[in-house]
Image (cartoon, rainbow, N blue to C red; front, side, top):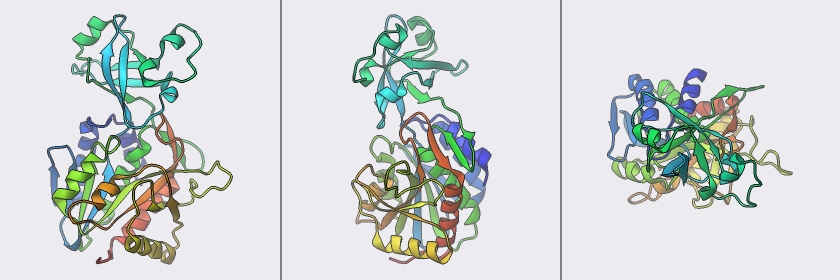
Amino acid sequence: MDIKLLEKLTNAYGVSGNESDVRKIITKHIRPYVDKIKVDDLGNLTAIKKGKKPRIMLAAHMDEIGLMVRGITNQGFLQVSALGGIEPSLLICQRVHVDAKQRKQLVHGVITTKEISNDEELPKRVEMEHLLIDTGLTKKALKSLGVGVGSYVALDEKFHLMNHHFFYGKALDDRIGCFILLELAKKLKRSKHEIAYVFTVQEEVGLYGAKTSAYNLEPDIAIAVDVAPSNDLGPDPTLNLGKGPTITIKDAEMIASVKLNDWLKKVAKKNKISAQLEVSDLGTTDALNISISKGGIPSTVVGVPIRNMHTAVSVGNLKDVENAVKLLSIALRNPPHI
């Protein structure tokens, strides 16, 4: 696996609605392995390798959780609004990158509150409205750089390898999925079947990119490649880091295709690939909107378990990523007709 590419994708800034930098990286790396690349009006990137039916849609979202500037105080502190589900208290003292129209100068800052900055006691419940970004710049200086209402703010944690195949970084949700699709494009270049690698936008704020891309593409089957929250620190863990990719049976809003899941489980068993089954009451993925597009599309989710989901820094295991690529590359050489 190209770990440097995973690092590059993870470190790239791309909060919901501002995925262009991630899209550029993906376009460069996938171009040699597909026949056609298109970016739709919403910003979804679709890369198609031509072939016979069934038409397979593989989807991974480019966007990450982040913030947007909603105001600037007279002292020059940035007030923010959330993009995606994120607990405000977990953002305190995190480093951020603020997108500026004048990109010649990077604007970095630290998330704080009035109380933290003044060494006072925090309120019992920290809300998004309490958070401020300290850039060290005045209101006038920020405006001169093009920072203002509507500016995007990304977390600034960097990718690092840890011990025993573990790694951490921001935006593992879902740059891991984007990376897996790029690895699959290499391995499936000579596949006989048509495969559409779709890199969606605005998943974190409403699964919007999946809805428009699936509508335009009309695939026969679809697999969203995403991450799943591990619970391996609990008393009865079902999703563990290092024990293989996940196959979603159901999440909070979707029941996955039984036929697709049976196919994936059969391939995993035959090839001795450890796979973990996910049944969850929390969250959902692009697969939901894909599955209900037009007349309905058989859909499921293959994921990689991670810890600390929707925080400034998550933890994953390279073996799970590797086995997700292995499972899908073998399975997609002989896809089912549903």
